[in-house]
Amino acid sequence: MSWYRNFLERLVACRRCPRLVAYRESVKPPPRFRGEVYWAKPVPPWGDLGARLMIVGLAPAAHGGNRTGRMFTGDRSAQNLFAVLHSLGLSNKPYSLSRDDGVELRCVYITSAVKCAPPRNRPKAEEVRSCSTWLAEEISAVRPRVIVALGRVAWDAVIRTLGAPPTPFAHGAILQTGAVKVYASYHPSPLNVGTRRVSLQQIAEVIRKAAAEAGCLP
Image 1 (cartoon, rainbow, N blue to C red):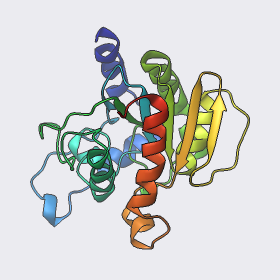
Image 2: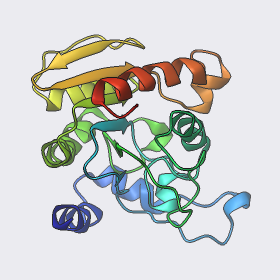
Image 3: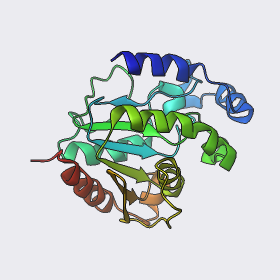
Image 4: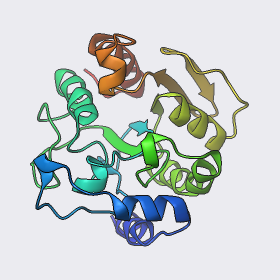
């Protein structure tokens, strides 16, 4: 779609947040990725451009999206998420490894509240606000029926972008705002899953309900 191509051209050229620009360009590969050339720019969203379900994460991981150039690709959070999406029939493969891995999403568009990898996975409030114009444009263009926000930062960013009043984050929370229904889930990070704050089954249940509400499941 012409909108998407134009969006990506503008997005990857973005240098609004000096701290994020400096960090994304300074990340050094660990031994397991030695020799790889990192993307090191704002990380593109991807998926079904006619999706009825949008999934919004926090931000690219330093050695995930910031390395591979695609959101939720190449790190353990991505593998957790795609194990869930594949189990629900929303992805053709149970992994997301690289931009040329052949993964296709059905009825799902994946993006993030912040487009650049932040230090320690913690964007500042002003960086989230600065990135909100990208998210607003995506929501306006894709026009999802349902959005799943993965984590508190994504939840706050989504409901603020939609013009809804501040609403506390809780796993499984649901908020109807205008024509869009927003579901909250803990982020599928190794920290959350590994400490049993949330299980993949619990994340899958939120996404299953959201996908059913969006009309993405039989």
